[in-house]
Image (cartoon, rainbow, N blue to C red):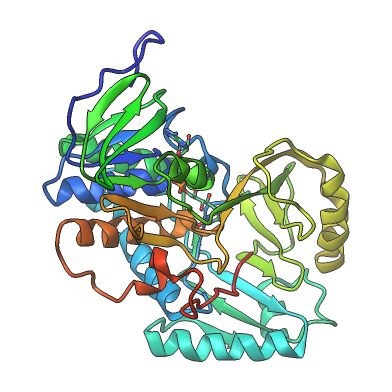
Length: 389
Ligand SMILES: Cc1cc2nc3c(=O)[nH]c(=O)nc-3n(C[C@H](O)[C@H](O)[C@H](O)COP(=O)(O)OP(=O)(O)OC[C@H]3O[C@@H](n4cnc5c(N)ncnc54)[C@H](O)[C@@H]3O)c2cc1C
């Protein structure tokens, strides 16, 4: 950490430089350090102050692609063991995720998802009738619903807790984690990564991992690498103290992307805006709240009595197929990517950090992660994730 506003002192060489100290960079740092490497994490602001600190904390295994279900299951097991392994809480609350379908096509997609998820090993997920969904959340408007899915081992965890827990554990194992320090240049020698420059200091390295979240494209450009990650603003709003007749699980109205979950003594409300253009803007567009409230009160009429306490916005880091990018950049040896998590990076961080560390340490990852390969773009190997919120 920098002291008294001066730049942190960086080493002249590092086995690995991780650009970005969000949940992804910190998870990777911990998993590399556990495997014997001593990475340097360079964060330009404070740990977890980017997208990580603005998220909703949702942790789910219900996805439409097999690889994301596997990543979700691995992350959930890692979060269940987090305090034992890391020595700090992950604030895991497994209250389940309820997905609501309104069209027949969505209900059909949900059935296919559940079949695939169970085949992959997600034993506790199930397809629900509308009546079953209403038992879980009696305040729902159900007359236009066509079906639902529920997985009780999904839930919420604490983005700050997980990020800072991984960072502290990484430091204990010999990683160096610096804040208030910006990577401004990446040097290449004969094509491969040779050094980074941060706050005017040069650190020679043959291994760099771009964990810059929504800024991954900018960090890629420093090395001449085109990283197809685009930033999109997303809002969250917190109600004053408010309770539904029964405390709900994380509940997602898939058709509109409106979702709620309990947060403290109120509810957290979120929804994406399909009309939102790509930008780095994180100002709250209060006009959007009206739009959200319309959907919220349609799906959960008692919300008409809730008052909004506060709201904030952060950035999703979206790729063309809504799948993360994990692997070495084509044609630039030593330049690795672990970014583009498309709005599900917090829940994927434990497994993503572990799986990439395995690859970088020369081990075989537990399952095939080629669906995340950076060279898939522009080919027919894209398997878009459709269970995005
Ligand atoms: C409103 C909202 C709700 C969300 N809800 C969920 C959810 O429920 N569940 C879920 O799994 N995900 C959710 N997400 C997505 C999740 O927050 C992100 O996928 C995840 O935090 C990405 O982590 P990251 O470490 O890649 O990025 P970040 O946390 O953004 O970290 C990247 C870091 O890189 C640093 N950086 C950038 N450029 C440089 C540079 N040149 N030099 C040094 N440092 C640099 C930044 O300062 C930043 O701290 C949500 C996001 C938003 C905005």
